[in-house]
Length: 390
Image (cartoon, rainbow, N blue to C red):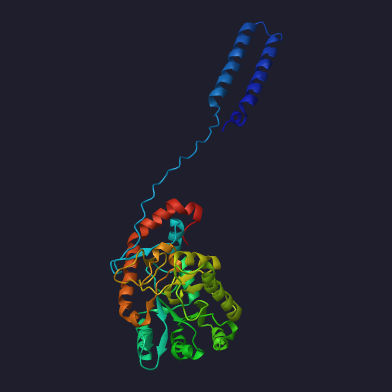
């Protein structure tokens, strides 16, 4: 690089001007007779002017960088929610997460439950060692057969806490999960005789729907409190009146709150932990009762409607009364799938396990089919504000 290029244009101009003055002064000094003063002056001016022009031509102006244009990508259309013809025609899957970005991130986070993970909630009322005399009973033999069928078809019994974490956040649980709920007040022996062997063998959890009507005077309270400390059974709310009177439109707010808040208070006081689930007594509820249950603090609610299995952000519900099953209350009007989750009776569960598994397998295949589209949508629409999918 030439030395003159190291100087700024003003500095080089000043230097050239000084050179011109020096030449002019020298030209004014007495010279030998053979030198023409006018010619020298003309030569000096021409030399200085040429140098200035050369400096201008070699100066490189600083260019202002232009901004890089942003290329906007068009996100693909998200696929429709998974549906299946296996359900009863009037039972439709409902979602409960409105934010697509939140749903997709939870769905595809690699440490969460895999798509197609199902939970089958099974309702037990009375496990009898004698002859079955009531539709709500199941014999010890049939109970044992059901538990072995669950295991042979790769089901695992989970806790209510696991259920809540899965339904809200898609937390990882076994891909074929069962939630076992024993309704009503039972002796500790009922649990140790029937459910403890499966906990010892397979670490299967069980939930009890505890009736809080008798408070601290309940004759089986102490033994159940002791049992709750073993870690394999949790106690959830099942009302505060006995016998059960299912909630309907005739119930006042005070009556509903007596059941909801009373059950919450008793369990928290005696079992040392607030319940997170409300098992609707007799399966009775209405939209207003569901709203009050939320106000009290319940996170999940269970009906006695056998609609089918549930998945993350996917709950089969009825939007209207089914003439073929008129006793099933329509859950859709409550507009809260997590508080109106289905349960299947113990005596019916075994014959439907294959169907439930098929629903999960079909949902998993549908998810794999649409994974690339959903990931592309997330990366374009969601990643900037919600971060990458872990």
